[in-house]
Length: 126
Image (tube, rainbow, N blue to C red):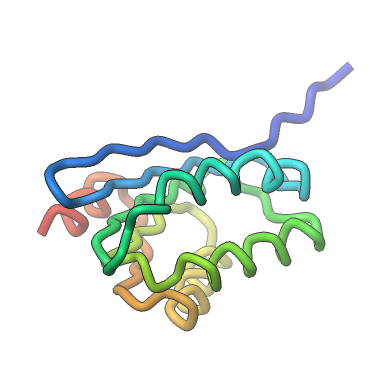
């Protein structure tokens, strides 16, 4: 029997007054994945009062979203979009480049797509 792996891993660091959030998406994300991760993100960003969060999203193992999970992702972006200074999306699929462009509509800070993780991290640290 083949196991289907999916979900989101989250890492949160705080350096002085700056938050660094890292997300790794895997497989096809479900509503249940968002029910698990959303409270963690909400809690981590609860104290952010101005755009100071830098985020790295690793989508190299992301296959996509179930319809309800895509809606959950959209709602999460609307809720926290004003809290981000920079969002780097690291991926390996053409549709992820388009997703990064769409993400710019919902995030007050900069959003860029990268093919190499090292380039994404360097940009975030500028």
